[in-house]
Image 1 (tube, rainbow, N blue to C red):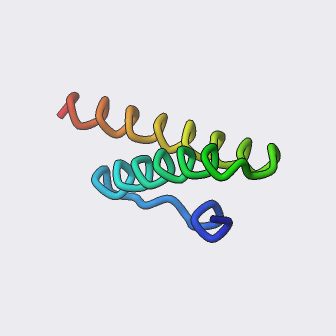
Image 2 (cartoon, rainbow, N blue to C red):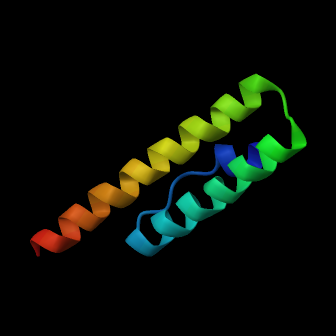
Length: 64
């Protein structure tokens, strides 16, 4: 779980979307596994950040 959180985010929009989906699944699994709150918080922050990156990429693509 920590390995995913430590990875550098991808540059391409598809990679950003894939990371967002992976983090969303990881967050669901973390909830189900009742992990420590600090770790769940880290996953949620990473997922939110990845989601913002996906939206930013989509906005940039729509402008071109």
